[in-house]
Image (cartoon, rainbow, N blue to C red; front, side, top):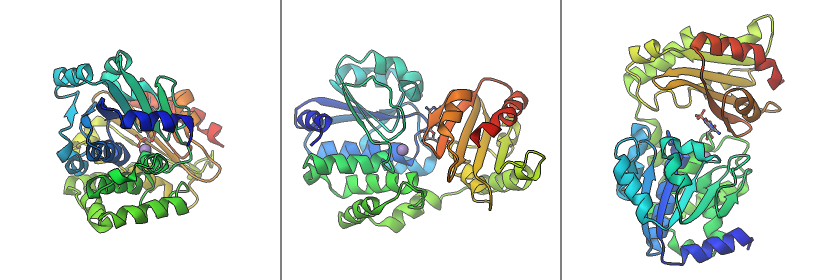
Length: 335
Ligand code: 5GP
Ligand code: MN
């Protein structure tokens, strides 16, 4: 067993007060890993609390229900108290402390043991125990692998299995990204063996669209999609830019545009997709790519972000028009 896992096992078998969190705007892998680890540690008889910077999209909320999760955006004092009373902090599914948003100071000032378990590239060196597997499909798959290596799978029950399935399913685009291999399917088969019903999780995550949400996606594709391969540059890139007014027109709620950027990438011949959204707190960028095109360094170098080779995010401090001009002037760097 690798040294960090020896230390992690020792920690999990000790009677600490654990505090678990993940990145802001939590996606399925963040929610799944937080909830999965909560149950794994509970099933080992540990004391565990869960906090997140802000709530996930509506369809993911039920997966946190049994964890008594509190959000910094809603109850900052209570979240701060949880940091005060914990003696072991575990960060999941993020590579930079800034990814916890407004909670950053609480994480930085935390005096107990810090653990980071993640699968993004270039993890920051802020934790006492770092488990980083960049090749791993998801933090949820990584958690399973860790518990297996530590010989702690006795902690795996239906509640944790269901949560881990959620993260693997969402971070692999329902088992279709290049990160999926035989080990992913072996682990998923094992999770099903613990009572996970895949169809129920697919239904809970994907069949909860509001009509406004579907209309916004239709509008984005039919009215706002720009394909650069039809322009003089002839680059195999598509982008969609949505202003605040446009989002509001469709009663935008958090999570409504989840996966929209992948739609761009599904167009024949397109190798990179960008979604630019004007949110109340600034301009959010999402990048996706495939084959020999990587987006994480582009997001990092030009849009204050990062992520994975094929999926990255960031933000722009400029106006929408300036952001688009900047994007178009730099996009050739991807090729
Ligand atoms: P999304 O486009 O879904 O927001 O993010 C895609 C990927 O990029 C996710 O894996 C996410 O963790 C990462 N990511 C998104 N926004 C940021 C950011 O601002 N900074 C960094 N370092 N990574 C990001
Ligand atoms: Mn993830």
